[in-house]
Each structure stands twice: as C-alpha cells, then as structure tokens.
Image (cartoon, rainbow, N blue to C red):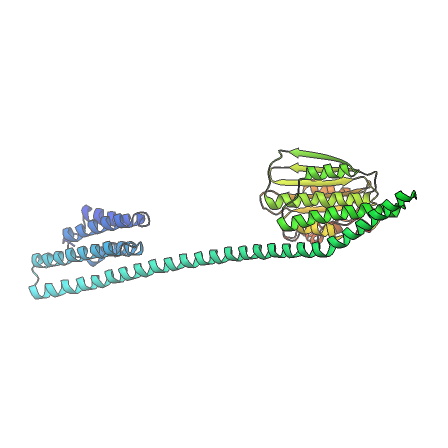
Length: 405
C-alpha cells in the first residue's frame, strides 16, 4: 500500500471486486473476471498486498466448483504474475536491496500460489461431492419408482389369481345351483304343479349371485368400476327398488381411486338396502360435488331400528377401509327416525378430513348410534380430547342388525 494510505480508488477497486462475488452462482466466470481485474488493478496501483488476493481466491474456488477449472487456473496465474511484478516494482521504487526484495516477493507469491491451489482443489472436490449427491438422489428416486411399479405389478397378479380362483371354485358351483333350480321350476310348470316359493327364491338368488360374481371378476381383472353411480341407480330401479338420485354441485371427472371409492360406496349401500331394508323402502342416493370434498350418501327409510344394537359387516368394513385410504370420513348406522344412512366425505385434493364438521355433526346426530361408536377405533375418544387428525380421520361404519356382508 502506498505511504499516503488508502484512497478512494483503492476502496472502489476492492469494493467492486468483493461485491461481484455475490453473483457467483449465476455467472461464475464473469465474477472471476471482474474480481481478478479489480484486485489486480489494486495490486498494480497500490502495491503487492496479500490481503487483496482474498476475493480472487474466493472467485477461483467458485469458478472451479462450477466446473470452469481451466478458466480458474488461468485467472490465478494472471493474478500471481501481476502480484509478482507489482512486488518487484514496488521493492525497487522503495529502495529495498535487490536480494532482500526478490526473496520477499517470491515467498509471498509462493504463499499465494498455495492458496490458489487449495481453492482449485476444494472447488473441484465440492463439485464432485454435489454430483455424487445428485446421483444418490436419482438412484433413490429410481429405487422408489421401481418399488412402486413392483408393488402395482404384484397387486395386479394377485387380483388375477383371486379372479381365477373365484371363477374356478364359485362359478361352477353357482351355475349348477342355478341350473338345477331352473330344471326343477321347468318340471313343476310342465306337470302343472305349484312352484314352491323357496325354489323360485333359489333360482332368483343364484342368478343374482352369478351376475354379482361376474361383476366382481371383471373388477378384479381390470381394477376399474363397471359403470357409474347413475347406472347403479338404474339397475336398482330395474330390480324393483324405489331409488332417487340427487346430484349437487358441478359434476366433473374425478381421479381414478376417488371414482372407484364413490362407486363402491353406492354399490354396497344399494346392495344392503336390497337385502335388509324391505321391499317398500324408499332410497335416496346423493352425490355432492364440492370444491374440496365429494359427498356420497345412501339413505333409506327401511326397517332398520336405532334401538337395536347394530353389528358391523364385512361390506361396511370394506367401505371404511376404502374411505380411510383416501383420508375421508364415513358415517353409517340406523337413523333415529328409522331406516339406515351411509354418508362418506372424500377429499378431492388428497388432504385428510377432520371429523366434526357442521355437516358431519348433523349426520352424527341423526344416527341412532352413540358418538363413540360412530368413530373408528379410539377416534371418538381422540376427538373428545383434541386428538390428532390421524386419530380422528375415519369414522367407523356400523352394520345393520344381523348383516353378514
């Protein structure tokens, strides 16, 4: 540094070279050029100073880390050459002995050369480490994707195996029952005999079982619904049920898993009505397309009694599991005024729902079951004590009295 101390130009050169480092991620080579030029100018103008090399060392490191090791090495060499020349000139002007001045400049230049070498090496090491981390992340993502694909493939293979087993074991037996019942009915009619009601019931039930089994086998092979809730309502009407379909909100296409769950809830609800509600029951199927929630309701005014202790069935358990997988809520049980209610709320955007919303509370009040029984597992207690969303996520269904599905 000059004897008169640092001036405005010194501060300007050092400040510009140092501030340029703030853009090292966006333009490492430009930053290296600006920093080297400014600090080299400071060294030439004010004399060789090791402190002035610090921003250049940092710029060399960032350029090497970005992969520009040749440019970084060249900038370091240029700065070291300028530093050595400035030291020699400054020593001669200051009147220092030639031998002593040359030795001091060489030592400081070699020291700076070691700093620049370290900056290059650490920059390259950092670059390699970042590349290793990226490769590790890619391998982890690839492994996760492979696991998901393998799980989906195994699930598909298992569905096909179950479909084959059902076809081989049940279809043959039910076909024989249906055939024998049909032959018996035909012979009775041919002889002019009165056909026993039990025989007609067997014939009808076996035919319905065959249709249900074929539908189940189709689902197992494709994992897709065989229709829509509206088609289920039409089939139920054709079978003699008084069913009304009410759609609220903007009807639109849904995600595959959400559409399957809604279909299965309506299907199971109508099946339970046909089996347990009585032939004169009136049924309402409701689909409420909200902005964030899809509401599915199957309600009847059948013979279910809120005073009789309900028994959970396999069908309602399956509904609960489907709703739980989507993070929704499910309420099911006999109503206070009579009949049975199944209501599900499914999130449209993948978020879990908390039980206890205004609509959910109204439904719970209309069910003839205690609040604790309407919530899955210990969720009723969890809701009462401020439990977490995971604890109160899914409301348990409660089966109809004597239901076995």
